[in-house]
Every structure is written in C-alpha cells, then in structure tokens.
Length: 267
Image 1 (cartoon, one colour):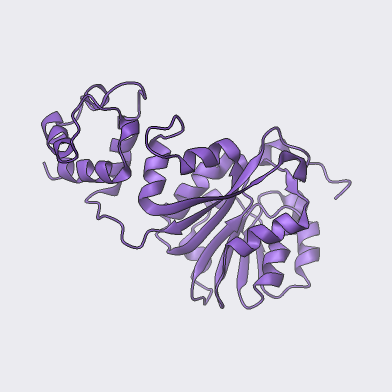
Image 2: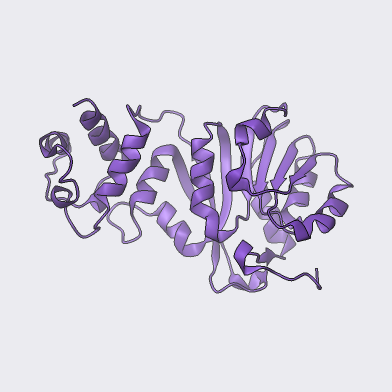
C-alpha cells in the first residue's frame, strides 16, 4: 500500500494495528453460519481477520473506491467466504443483496468511513433487516453522542432515536496514531445490540420528526419547539412522568418521546 494514494473524499484512514483489528472482530461474537456486512474494507485489514476468525460465516464487503479493486480481488482470491461489491453502500438495496445468502444471523462489523457514519446507521435501521449486532469504529465525539445519557451536552435527537432501536455500548478507544494516514481525532469502537422488546410505534416517521423537532433549538423548551403540535396532548403525556411543557428535550428519555408520538398520532 506504500504507493496507494489515499483519498480524503472517501475518508480513507487505514487501521494498521493487527491486535486492535482482531479485538474489533471479536466484539462481534459472531455465531456459526452467519452473514457479516462490512463497509469500506480498504485494503482488507479487517475483512480478512473476520474471514479467518469466522471461517464458517460469509463476509459481504462494500468498497466504493475502484482503485482498490486490484488489491482487494488479489487478496480475496485466497478466501472462499468473502465477497466484495465495488459500489456505493448507501445506494444499494440491502434486502436484494442479502437474499441470495443462506445464513442464521446477520451482523455488521466495520471501520466505517467517518463522514457517512450516521447515514449508514439509518440505512441499517431502514433496511428492516434484523441485525444481531452492529460493531462500528467512529469518531470519539460521535461515539460520545451515541452513548450519551439524559441531560448531558452530547445528548440529542440522534441519541434518542438510536437508543429506541439499540442497547449501545462504548467498547474501547483507538488512538489516532494507530492509523495511516493519521487522522485529527481519536476513534472509539461502539456496539449496538438490537432491543428485542421495543415499545410499539404507531408511526415511525412521525416519531423521527417529533424527536428532531423537539431538539430543533436545544436550549428552548418543548413549549417553544413543539408549537406546531397539539400541546394539550403533549402536556397530558408529560404529566404522567412528572414533567411539564417548560422542560427541555435533553431531559427526556426515548421512552417519553415514544409515548408522546403515539399519543399525538392518535389525535
């Protein structure tokens, strides 16, 4: 890879430390006969650790950079459990891509390009595929936002939405010096485990809109941020939790937002 030209537009910073790569792969705890999806394999450093560690599972990797095709195809040739799609992951139909694979459980394990971290997560959610576990390396400050607790400065709409879908755990920090080229920030490995007993949502799109509207102006109260909604209904739900309309969104758990969304959608 010494003569490879790294491309900023694809967020290419390759992790070199093999022990860290293996540690990431092991967090997946992949069961036999599974399908593992990876985005942005680069030169395949994580891909082939996954292939060796989980020999009876299949790895489906998506790489947008065609200049890596020769490197990856050459390395893939010695593995019969790795397929690489040279395409933009965000433009693919995951259900179509996975329907020809026979597997027991589905996993996502990837050192994702940082600039598309959130779009990738929402694509996984919107695919309606059941992921047993998602393991991602993300920028540390983004990981802090994912794992934030109520009333912390990092807590926001994204935190609420992701916590509705997943149990989220910050696994470990990866120092910026472990990458080539060296990025300007440290990274963190975050795991997402599907919540099996999610509260029922009457309308998922409405829930997402309500959450985003609630955080539109973070320092304002729900009374101000939700003026376009039926505030009497919002107040009725808040009363159940001992709150009123003068509370800020950052003080509410995802369960309160689910309750508000469901109540409003019935009006």
